[in-house]
Structures are given as structure tokens and as C-alpha cells.
Image (cartoon, rainbow, N blue to C red; front, side):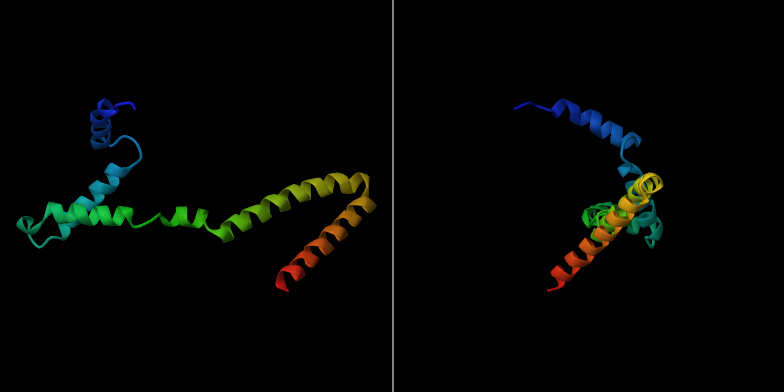
Length: 121
């Protein structure tokens, strides 16, 4: 097992300088807003503020990450990729062999409908 303790000081220093993944900027915004919302400068409790920041940051993913991880987004992305690829393929094949392209489209449509009907029952 390797000892990575020598990396810790560099990591902390980089975090405090604001380099990296943006955690410092988020913490700084949280700290400033909590300090501004305190009734008086003496009423601000740094320990409570840090606990609140920890709870907020571990609560979950951001909106964009949750949308990108959702099943509807994955289905939409897959559909759009197949639509784009199919339109390129269909236009290429359709110019040289229009009958074969029509038959492939009909077979694909029937296969999709049959699989949907099978899933329902």
C-alpha cells in the first residue's frame, strides 16, 4: 500500500487557491451568503455554516447532471442519433436503390410495432 500523505498538503493548497473543480468558489459563495444573512457579525456561527454546506453539497447531483442521467434523456439521445444516422443512410441508399430502401423502412416499422405490442401484453 502506498502512502499518499505527501499529496494532501498540495491538494489543500490548490483547493484554497481556487484551482480545480470549483469547490472553493461554491464554498466561498455559501460562506458569504450565510455571513450576510446573519443578524449581526457576532451571531454568525462558522461551524453551523460548514455543517450546512456539507449537507447541501452531499444532498445530490445538480440539475444538469440529474437530467443527463435520466432515462428519458438517454432515450431521446438514442432516438436522435438513430434518426440522424438513419436519415444519412436512407438518403444515400435511397438515391441508388429506392425499392430496397422502401422495403427496409416497411420491415423496420412493422418490427417496431410488433415489439411494442409484445411488450404491452
